[in-house]
Length: 421
Image 1 (cartoon, rainbow, N blue to C red):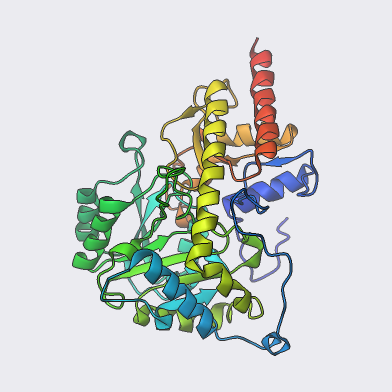
Image 2: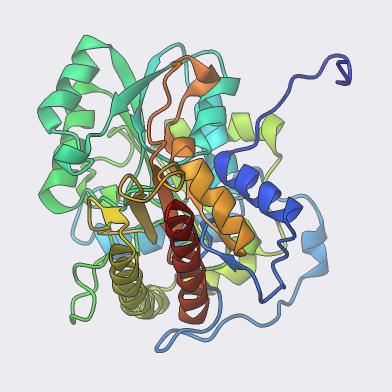
């Protein structure tokens, strides 16, 4: 019997949201110390050694209980522009201003504004990539999403010549990607990233970059030279180069509950997404915006990012060692973000399937994300699902939680091995 309410479609949960809903059905509660969440993409939010003090309380101006501008408060927009100019555009003639910035209520809302403003185009996206892109690329019908496969043999990177062929052969007018990549942790930086920006500029293909993990860079950790990554470094003209950047407080500042993000783009794009925001969401949280300004001082960002990189490098190495010792394969070392893209194919059946691995983990109170959810497949146009033998395992939580979560995964594998014997 069909019990749906007339007029409504079945809206799928994004992969991670499905995972958390299923875990809740099995008894998961965030405050329950028996559970370990290695699934949801959340960094630890407590104080880190060497990091600035965490915000403990907020002071709200009563006047800010009113609606704020759809694009955010001008002072915050200018502060975002100043930060990017300081980090990535020193001594460059073209500089970002407040008119190149839009404030929004989190990354998914920012990306929704952007795709809502796209025209009748072919949009390239990559496999695997962030699970929420699937529904994002399904709900708006003006553009056609074109998948581009990332191969493990090429370290989940795409040769520039192939991208050029995709742009010319398929008539791509925009590309959407996360950098560093969620879930593989692969990174475009330096000359490689510069070439992507050059290609976008020369072939007039908008490059939409989800840079939410751009401070989680590990190759320079422990050195005196902090390394964060942004395509903003290689933009020649901030109002002509078709580079659209999305970032926010969720990951790089470790304030996911604040739901504040920003988009940096040519003024023309900012105007378009402001129009989209006026009917989609109406604007970001207004009272919090003044409090964010102090988090965007260059010295604060340097201190926070340095502490973050040192802490998460240790966690990455620890989790990698533990997983490899369990017989879980890792094809590519994550250069950024805080995930391990784990190949389960060598595990005993049924654990060599990401869904079965996830379900078995729930019985031991540990959460992972099946790899199949990163096979971004808008409207399920493709019948064959890739990455069934993969899982994404987060090293975002505190070290103590990682230790307990990996102990639980060891029990899962040991139990499966006993069953076979």
